[in-house]
Length: 105
Figure 1 (spheres, rainbow, N blue to C red):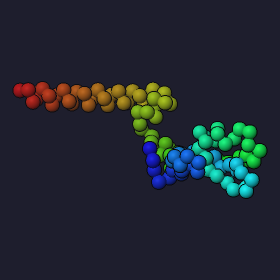
Figure 2 (tube, rainbow, N blue to C red):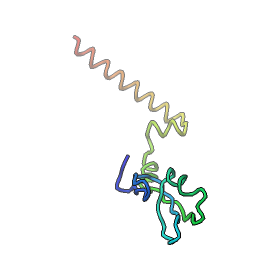
Figure 3 (cartoon, rainbow, N blue to C red):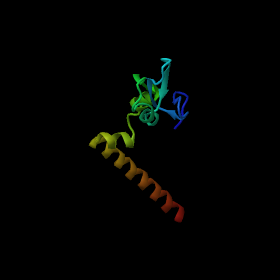
Figure 4 (cartoon, rainbow, N blue to C red):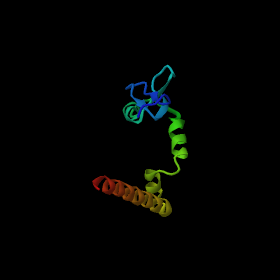
């Protein structure tokens, strides 16, 4: 998913949620590179210097805002939330069956 909050890797130009700030040349210029490019520029580079990690804050904020989602409750294994989802699905199923039966009469 590409959003306005994502940044492009300065080596491969792909948009990523996580980039690493590194120096990889003699001129001491900082670059933001993705994890794939980091594997290429880091080994055997005498000028390599790590300068921190940039992460997409919007992605983290979105995870915090989602409180009642199927994916979230399954990941956290919250039995009460999973139970509520199954009850909701059962009620929805019954409503659909009732509409179908009314349509057949």
